[in-house]
Image (cartoon, rainbow, N blue to C red; front, top):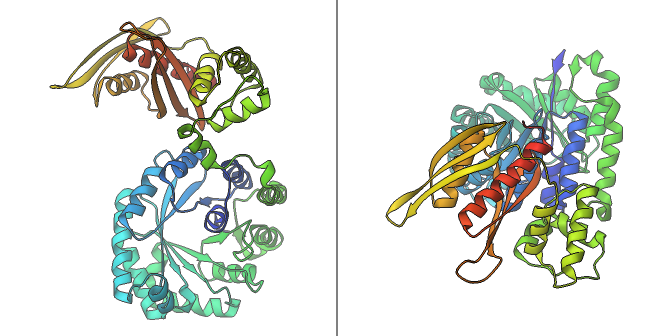
Length: 469
């Protein structure tokens, strides 16, 4: 039985052609994972902060699937993609480039040799970062066969372990597909040494037949989509394999029981924008653009703004936050920072896994900042010593050494609560872990101490919520 890998391009297509909200993206990923696709292709990095936030959110969900990140032909594109993929367990960098004369010159403004050199350079640099590198030859079926096979040979020699041929025109018949792949196999024996992928368009409703022909001729990776009207439809392809897969000797890892229902949910999700939630841009921008809530705002309005700040609260925690909000709103308007302080002080109050015992900070303009932190866990003291770029950075790194893991610092705020030389400072620390945001609050006349307490407070919430003892 021949095992076929399914790489779904739904998110890639949506990112290129339409606006899609944060919750729609995450929910689409969840449904694709339920279906059992092997790979999920995302869009290119267009906003480092928002796209990285999305990938960090899905990281704990996608442990059994490969996340494929398309990159352009520049080093900046590659660096941005690799940084965004940092928390993804199974990842693949995908370099796509046209190999037909018309697309090379009119879309990329490159001559054939210059295109080959750009592909070689980008694939080689990608391989230095990631073990899994895919090269996609776009418009392959309209390319000069000698140029195409030479370009693919160079990509393989540069480190690409997956080669995908894309029928961008979408007009290939099964018999033409067989001839095309036969010519490649004859001129490029190295294709048998890598994963051979094929992306079939369904422009003339021949996608399924073309994909089956490609598999018959050696392809082991097929691209599908739920949202596109042109790319091979996942549902139609799976239906064919369900009926004829055994006869053809083809197996896939798709959960056929959940497939129809999950595909229908994705289709409904993407056509019902009002039920999908807030766009990711709103979630990110609201931190930088303050809002104002008052005594007349109800719990649903407060809940909406808490979600926009990135928090997921239980019904019980939301009630606590709203009670505190209502009390303060009688005296003043509540902005983003004030609401975050309320969330940090009221939501998810838990028994402490770690307690701060002591801290010693050394810092000055002629020395590198250092921190010596001691935390108590289960009655035992654990110490951590670290250098850092400033006293607070050193303190946070020392805590990470104690707990033996790193959590992403999503945000860090310091503000004065009272005035004068003995002013009390408040610190808010937001840590992102397992796809959720956890905030901690610390108050002290020593702002470094307040920051350490805020970090430990957020850390304890992570430990409690995820059963880390």
